[in-house]
Image (tube, rainbow, N blue to C red; front, side, top):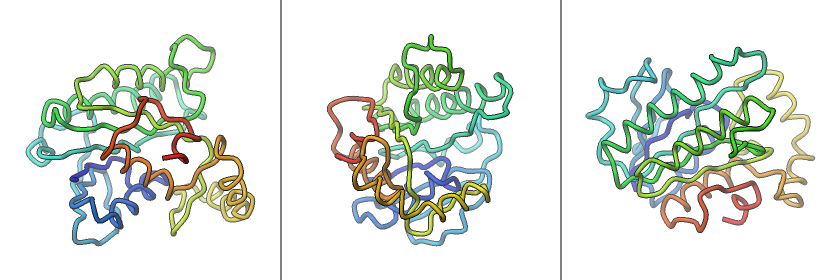
Length: 219
């Protein structure tokens, strides 16, 4: 399986990249990002790209892939509504529309979040935007599309948050997070389980298009 990964320098993307590189069934990983990952591996290839609403300059490098793991995302905290919508909805749909045209047999996997609002009518802004993004992705003619909605994520295997204070919390809370990952699958998963689940679903499919945290852990 050949995969494209967006968001590889973020915490979720780091975990997914790691699992792709250790999975013998993944033969090639193309990372598309604004900055290099710093990772060296025989099956890893990177394309640096600045304009995430226009991929025309790199289209030739995006052909021939079986799956896309879209792990690019931002927090809505302190962000203006239009800016958040642009970074969440516009960027995701620009990538997805390009990829479905170039690779119609592709499986597209989008990392969203618990409490995403599929009705697009609820009171929480970020949840509405995520809901619209999910809904419009599911309308595209991919071979299949899956929405991953993890709740809490425990970073493993050297995966780190780029935000210093968040990383400090992960370090201090590691024993509790590990306990919750084992005992409360509805509320906690790990970066390893998330990455492995995305690979397995892209390869083998899943009975429903939206996977909550407990589904991710079960996979």
